[in-house]
Image (cartoon, rainbow, N blue to C red):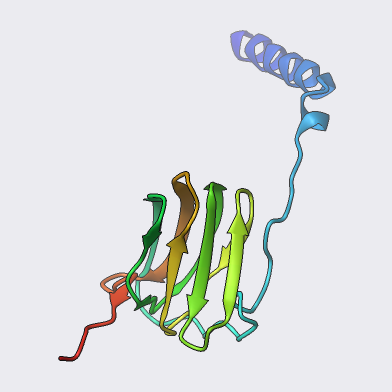
Length: 142
C-alpha cells in the first residue's frame, strides 16, 4: 500500500513538473557541426585505442603570441571572452570574437595570437586517445 501511495505521489509530481513552462524556455544553438577544420580541410579518421577526453580553459593575455604548435587529435572550442587570431603555416587566418566556435587544425602547424587589450578566454575540448599528447610544440632547429 505504501509503495502504491509513493508511486502515485511520484507520478503526480512528474505530471505537475511537465506542465511547467521551464522546458519551453530551454534554447539549444548549434555552434559547430562539421567534418572539416576551420581552414576547410577534412578531419582525420579517429585513432584506435582507449578514448580520452580533455577539456581545457585557456586564458591568453593581451598582446601574446602562442608558440608554433600542432594537435595530433581532433579538438574544438568556443572563445568565451576577448578576441583571438589563429594562423596556419600556409597563412590561412581565422579571426575569432567572443562566442565564436573553432574546429582546430589537426597535425598542421599553426599559432594563435591575442593582439587585443583584454585576455582571450577559450574552452577547448580534445577527443583523443589515452597517452597521445594534445599539443606538440615546434622545436627550433639551430
